[in-house]
Every structure is written in structure tokens, then in C-alpha cells.
Amino acid sequence: MLLTIVVGSVVAVLTYKLARLIIEGGQFRKNTRCDGKVILITGANTGIGKETARELLKRGGKVYIACRSLERANQARDELVAQTGLSNIHVLELDLASMDSIRQFAQRYDSGRRFLAQEKRLDLLINNAGVMACPKALTKDGFEQQLGVNHLGHFLLTNLLLDALKAAAPSRIVNLSSLAHKYGKINRKDLNSEHSYNQVTAYCQSKLANVMFTRELAKRLAGTGVTTYAVHPGTVDTDLPRHMGSLFFLFDHKLVKPILSVAFKTPLSGAQTTLYTALDEDLAQESGKYYADCREQKLSKYARDDELAEWLWNESAKMTKLSMG
Image (tube, rainbow, N blue to C red; front, top):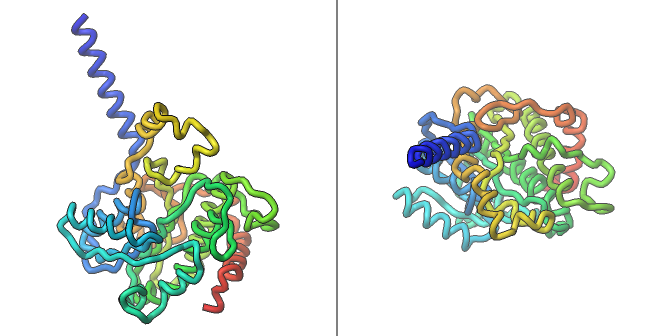
């Protein structure tokens, strides 16, 4: 009887560990350094972004975290400094739901608050921030929030920082997308969800927009030394799905929530594909592709629609008034 219990316990532990290995997914195991490189990560005060900042700081980078809440960003910075003993991490205010905030962030004066007033080059831009499946809300400019924050905000930010990225070439842009992009459609007739809204459909559209932006950007940056990558981090235990409880009450159930978290990646594992695309020298000649679990993944036929990607770029430029800025 005792032997049976012991054997059963060992099998259970080994099964759990194997399951966790599978869940955690691909890992970036190279010790690639980024000494002296200037790195900007949006939304890095928690979750995947925070773990990405920690790892790049440890590898020698000069890391900027750009967040809507300065209080939370400074708290994250203090924690990272205390944990790593490294202080080359800096905080700047950036609200991706505000085109004015993004334009101010990229201005070249007021050195205490503007990125380009402090740095003339940018080696690595990681567009990490995002919102997921939230109830309908509008940004300060009247954009549906998920399209506005996940796509349009990063679209404008990236374009305003392109000169700094070109100055640092070879440099990289990493856009966090999602497997959800495969279920997305770009609604040409109602891109901004003005006539109808579904929080999951809008999320999938925004993640598809991230992939299409990455691909179109790669075409436009060909020959400049700036390369682009779209990333699916996996299903990660962060606060990003906090709005899902409004769709599926079990997400918030006190008994179910801990069980679900066991089935999710840790934020550190969620950061691995970001680190892979940001650092791996083997990807230096790649651009415009999509990755998950530290491997290139095949895009759906819809996501490879070049004509639609160009249409989305032009529409995004109009909506963000890119030509004015």
C-alpha cells in the first residue's frame, strides 16, 4: 500500500513537471548581451514587459520603460533595481490612448520628460503594452480602445521613433501580437467599431493589425538595417485578461482562478520569445515574420494579405494624422 502511494506520488510529480515544461514552451537559452544598447519597452511595469526589462537590464542594456502610470512604473523600477543591483533603467510617461501623449513623448526638447530629448538613437523598441477584451471604451482621440492602444498608439509611436532606430542600425522592433490574430478580421467598413462592437472580435482585430503592421513596416524599412518581428508570448499568467470575467464568470471564481493560473505560462516564460526576437543574432537578416515559443510560425492566408496590410497602414496614418507630425 505504501509502495503504491509512493509510486503514485512520484508519477504525479513527474507528470506535473512534464506538463509544466510543455506549458512554459520554448526558452531563449543563449547568453547574448546587449551592452550599451538603448532599449524602450512600452507597458513594462508588470507582467511580460517587466520580465523583459529585467532580463535586458541584466544583459547590459540601457532600459527605458514607458508607462501610463508613473507611480506604478517607478515602483517597478525600484523593484528591478533592488533585485538586480543594476540601476540603468529609466521611467518615462506614455499614454498610448492619447495621440498628444505619444507626440509629446517623441519630442526633442524638455530632457526630463521626452525620450528623443535624452536619446538620439534607439537600438531596440519593444511594443509590449496592450489591453484585452475590455468593455467598449474610447481613447482620448475617439478610437475604440483596443484598436487605439494595441495598434494605433504603437503605430504612431514607432513611426515617430524611426529616425532614432535608423541611427542605431542594425536595430530591431518587436511587436507583441497574439495567436488570437488568426481569428481576427480587419473590418474595412467599421474599423473603429462605431456601428457594432464585440470585445473579443475587437481584440482579435487589433492583434491581427499588429501582425500586418509588422509585415508592412518590414517592407518599408527594407535596406535601412531596421528589422521587425511579431510575437505571440503564449497564454501567460498576467493581469491582461482581467476583463474576461465579464464574458466568462469562471475566470474570476475564487476556486477556478488558481487552477487556471497553473495552466498558464509564467511571465518570465512569456517573455522568452520577445527576448529571442530582440537578441538572437541568427535573426539579424529576418524581418516581418511572426514567432511563438522561440520559433517562426506560419501566418494565416488572411494575415499575409499585402493589399490589406497596405490599406491598414494608410488608414492608420490618416487616423493618427501621421503626416502632420
